[in-house]
Figure 1 (cartoon, one colour):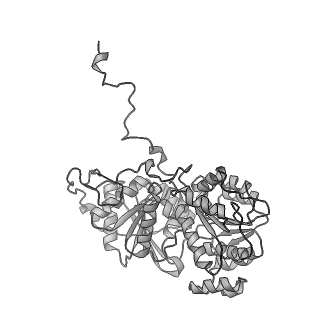
Figure 2 (cartoon, one colour; figure 1 turned 90 degrees about the vertical axis):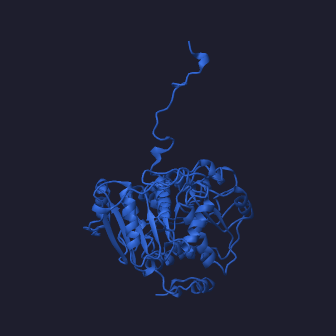
Figure 3 (cartoon, helix red, strand yellow; figure 1 turned 90 degrees about the horizontal axis):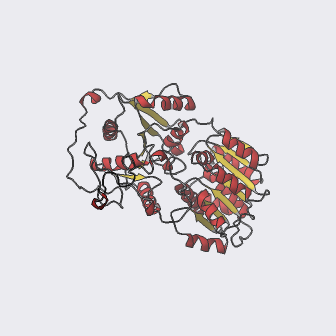
Length: 463
């Protein structure tokens, strides 16, 4: 089967051909014909299978005729993160180059002004994260009563990030006559409830067993004898140094604090690495991702904000510095490599404290075990006593907002904490803020709060 067999219009087929594609992926071949019939579609496929084109192409085909009105977009695509929303917009520009469709991207971290202007002119395609979309609606800048098509992408990630109430609210703002295209890699009960409530007799398209991993990916683990961050960083550096055919790699951590520390540590030891997570400014994140795509950056240290939907085709390695808290995230993390038929390699560091999470990964993926890397006598001879840098030494530059970084006990430069003041928009929330580690927010070094004057009573109060 080729794209010519799917029923798409000639000008759209020309753009697909110019992009270098001739054969649709299984999810595209199954979903696109049903979407062109105007039916609701429930698409279930693992990451990296071409889900984005499964809804972008039918929307362009449908909107080729007609005209947008002010503040009333004709189609809406909801994405869980800014990066994924930006990637969808790139797909529209690529496939819609022969059409005169207007588009607006509503994401946090940027000013409202440009977004307001585009909405007032009218847009055919609106791509948004849930928080910023609701912001604009509550400001009276947006009406959803004219929607013809609505897409929810990476629905299970929306669930993980706590956006299900927002999704329900947005659905209720749209007309019941809309067509809905709903895509997810997994179908937990909460997502099933949403589809039962808001989709009308959807066609279910499932190309792979839920939560399977691509056969092109070689999966390995390293078992650590103890849970020690210094040891984990030393093991990771050894794996990077000795990795075969390591062109580039993404290193995933569960906590944003660990992302900053690890990125700076890798820089200190001579590796080109930069962090990316939900607390960093949007401009920094965009620049970092572009540098990684262009090949100027070798290692990307990321929270799960980068685990899903980012289309970076030639990632050779994925390192799981942390075993993911949610087993589903393992599938999405390693899905950053081995894309489009390419081979990839993943390595996960497993400590004794990770036993429960690791068992959940095996159960979800259906694997009896994952190949273990023999570290030889590394654990007996590893040297964790780095010399400390000079006091007040500045960071190697992983975070451009830093002024002075502090030193850790193993001589690594700590990335400074990011402050909420760095966010560039008054959005109601950061759409892709990580859920992990929220219990630590607001603490300062674990110290108990001081009541009144504490021990520092002014002299004039003394008896």
